Length: 259
View (cartoon, one colour):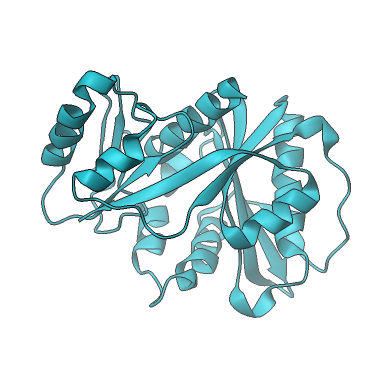
């Protein structure tokens, strides 16, 4: 389980960074004991400090150094997962003035060989292969913020060329109902595991089994690519869906806003 937790942390970090490398205006800082992903946009969805591995004796000093290195006036989020070090990193961030957001997410894993068929739906699930389909992916996600996020479509337009390369470790999926994009999923193949991200359904189309259908689609993609284990971070609402599919819990993930 420790190995899976470490793989989740490394997958999450690379997921945050991979589309930013070489993108004008973005930067990725990797000093060896943490990763900082800076999209250049004013949105902490795409600006992260992640996968910290600090020795206890220097952890407080490293927290201060990392925070001081961030550009002023742009929001960032520090993610603390089950593999983060020291083990009290979340408490140390709170003591430094950055308390966690109220919701705690569950780190979960799944044995891909256990994938079973899900109930059929009226969705047409499409693997993204064009800029228009990637824009549809972003269009489903953006309204999930209040107010709807203008940055989400901007981000995916900014990184579209890299995201659509055949060798990109990210695979994006959109679920269409009567030609309208209503649900999304992403699988990211890195660190020996399939990381699952952006399982989302438009509010007016929920409770129809779409999240389970999209999750099964990306798990099938992982199986076809030869991956044996999948990992994800589940919200309280999403956890019920993943448990029904057979995902198991392996720890907690906390988010700290660096304001």
